[in-house]
Structures are given as structure tokens and as C-alpha cells.
Amino acid sequence: MKRWSRKTRVLVFGTGAGGINCYRQNSGRYNIVGFLDNDKQKQGKRLFGTKIFAPAELPHLRYDKILIASDYYLEIHEQLVSSLNIDDNIISIFHAGAAIPWFKRIKQTFLFALYDRLCKKRDVLSDAIFPFIFGKASGIKRMNLAWLDTCEAYRVHRFREPMQGSVQPPRVLGVHTPPKRLLIPEVSLYRFNKATVYSTSRSVQLPDGLLVMERVTTTATPTADYCAGPVIYHGEHLALVRPSESAEHIPKGIIINGVNELNYYHWVAETLTQLQFIRELPQPFSNYPLLISERSQKIPAIRFMLDGLTKGHDIVFLKSMTAYDVDDLLMISAAVNLVPNYRGPVVGCAENSFARPESIHFLRQTITHLTSSHSLRKMPTRILLARKDYLRKYNQRELITLLEPYGFQPVYMDDLDIADQISVIANAELIMGPTGAAWTNLIFASPGTRALCWMPMEFGETACFSNIADINGVEMDYILYPAGTSNSRALYFHDYTLDLKPIHEWVASKTSNPV
Image 1 (cartoon, rainbow, N blue to C red):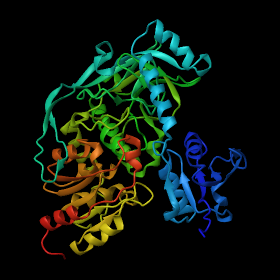
Image 2: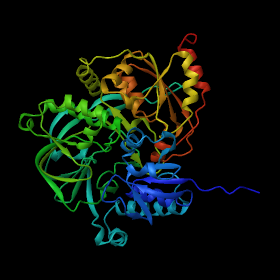
Image 3: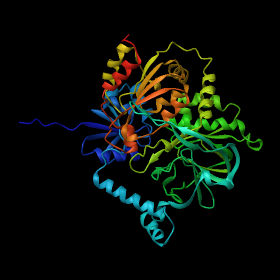
Image 4: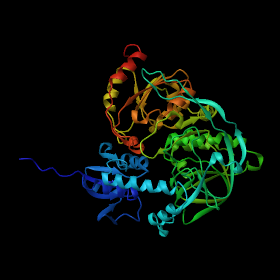
């Protein structure tokens, strides 16, 4: 007789859109015994008939697993493990891109087809579809879209001319992969009057109904998706925007931002490199305050770098998803950029990203100088960029055991301050690890360093890290593995099992006998 097995008892941390999606997708699979939320106003109430608890109540609750369903999973994970002593092995991250039922995928595909038609052109058909989909109560507007690089009328200064350059696709082991030539775009200063901005979007809303948005000019990928903040969908000439009902007022400022204020790569490579050019502002604009996301203050390494790069400038910190009406707004176009997302499968073309070498060197020199006075402890020369088990799990423990005889030490970058992060990368002779934001620190690697990265083959020629390696003279190899999904968000969380044989062979070829 088959023994009855009860469903896993799960607590969902988060009661926003993530928590709602998590419940809807997992209520049949798990026994959702409760929700968790740090918002005191929600604690004690119910969602889907299930009670919302305060995290402090965890010792008194019966459960088997915690699913974090929030964009702030890093902070929540830290809270659970460090402050509440929850076992890391029972914590997982929920992402909406996984396990979506087939009927919801069909519905989403149909909806995006309608959005695409709305953003193609204004005509009788699209004018009829628009109120049918959204209605007046939604507040969503269809705005004319102009790409920042085409807005000559708003450009007031050019910091750098376009330049012939290249991008280095990932060098897969055993495959000859030369760099690809491309035109690195100019870096310019744009000025807008009576503009509305958000900390999370490289877009500007103007009073005449025009939306100006930045794109990656080196790529022709048709499914490149720049939606963030209030922008819910865009075509080439029109966009669907959810304007805020209210906005905070700022007299003047320079927006320094990106499309992802939770990701270390986007912060360092794309946002902080904009600060290279505030030193070259034309005199009339030199006293403008910098408008920067307050999230920068919650990431210690970013806060340290930002403090050093912005000395002498006033800063106005922007709240996430809050609209700001700025009377006199300045915006600096990106010197380093990457297509942030895709509609549908990832399109991993090398040209989907570019980096101006002088901006990478600017960060390297400036940040290294800022940490030069810090007392640094001795660092290992062979390192594995290790990952906490709650995110994109793989057979890491088996790999650590394999690498130990060769003198490799696992390093968790999140646990190090910025001085030690720089030191451990600068001192390393051999670096390996899965693709992810930790590889951003190759900006600080020494020329001649050898590196091995493994990446889902579904990412194709995604070149943001291999290009940084090439600029800094790092010999970086890649191993590709099948992730089984091409959804860009799912790839970020998707668990996998890594074939350790090619890694063992790479290590053996780069080292002498095990130490």
C-alpha cells in the first residue's frame, strides 16, 4: 500500500505582485500555510484567506520551506539567514517566469500581440483596440516615442564623438572567437524642460506627450526590451506608459540612473560610468545636483564607490517607482550599455552590448585609488566565485571538492567589502565561476589573469563580461551548458547540473600538479 505523503508546507515572503503570482502558481503544488511581510500594516491581515505573519513570528510557525517572492530577495534572504537564523537550505527564490501554465502563456502571447499592434501606429483599428484593452480607469497612455540618440534638438553638449571599436564575444573553449567591429556611440548631454523621470527607467516624459527613451544603438535586435518604471510596452515609435497620479517636484538636476537598481553589474558598469563625465560639465551646469536612486545607499559597495565618485556634488536621492517632475533636467547618454531584456527568448548577440574602454579604465583607476588606503589582508591567487545556494543552484559543493587540491578557494563577493573585492580580483591569477554580476569586478583584474566562466548556451554571445575581460587584458574562456529555458528572467534563477569534466581539464591545463 502506497503511503500518503503530505504537501510541502510553504510560507511565501511577499504580498505584492510577486506573492500573488507565487500563490497562484504554487497553491496546487504546495500547502501555502501563510505569507510573510515586513509591512506592519499588512501583518495580521489575510491574502487568499491565508494569514500574513511578521517575520519575527517564524519561530512559532510550522513550515518546511520559505519562498521569497519579492524583487528585494537579497535583503530578505539576508534578513532570514543573518537576523532570524533560518536554515539557508529551506529558502528559495520564486520567479514569475517559471512554470507558467500553458493557458496563461497563450493569454500573455495574445496580449503582447495586441500591445504590439497598439505601438505600431495610430489608426482607426488601434484607436478602437486601446480603450477595449485598458479603459479610462487604467490611466495608461499611448505616447509618441523618440529614441535619445535621435533627439538632436535636446542635445546641449557632446563629451565624446562616436568611435570605431569592438566587442569580444565569449571565447568558448576550443572555438576561435575573434572580436566584432562596431561603432561605439557618442556620449552626449541632453537637456529637457518640465520633464518627468523615475529612478528605474532611462526614459523622460515631456509635457507635449513625447516619451524619450535610451536604447543600445549598436544592436538591431528587434525584440530588445527597454521597458522599466512606468513604461509597460514600446514599439519603435509609440509606447504604453502608466503615468503616476502624483509626482514630487525638483527644480533642477542630472539624472544618473539605469534600468535595474538591484543588480551590481548595471550599477557599476552602466550607471557609475556616467559619473566620469560630470567632471566635464559645461560651466552653466556644473552646480546641478545629481539625481540618484536611494537604493544606492543599501548596497555597501555601491555606496562606497558613489561617495568617492561624487565628492563636491550635491545629491538628491530618488525613491523607487516615485515620479519626479524636474523643471530643468540633464541626462548623460551611456558610455557602457547592455540590452536589459528581451520579448520572448534571449537574443544573445555580442552587439547587444558595448563598452567605451576609457570608461572602464576610469572606474578601475578611480575606485582602486579610493581603496588604496585600506589595509588589505592576504588574498588567494586561485578563486572560485561562489554562489549562495538559494539562487540558481548547481553542483557547487562537488566542484569545490574537485578544485580544492589545486588550491582554489571559494569566495563569496557579497560577504566582502569593496576594498577586499577589488583586492581579491586584482591578486587572483586564476578565476572561475558561473556567469553573474560578480564578474563585473573583472574591471579590477590584473592583465594576464586567466578566467573560466560557465554560462547557459541560451545566452548565446552575450558579451558584457567577456568584453570587460578583453578591455583589461584578461584571458577569459567559456563553457556553455543547456539550461532548458530561453526566458531571460527564468535563466537568472534556473537550477542546473554542471559537467565538471571540462572544468577539470581546464584547471589541469592551467596549473602544474595539485598543490
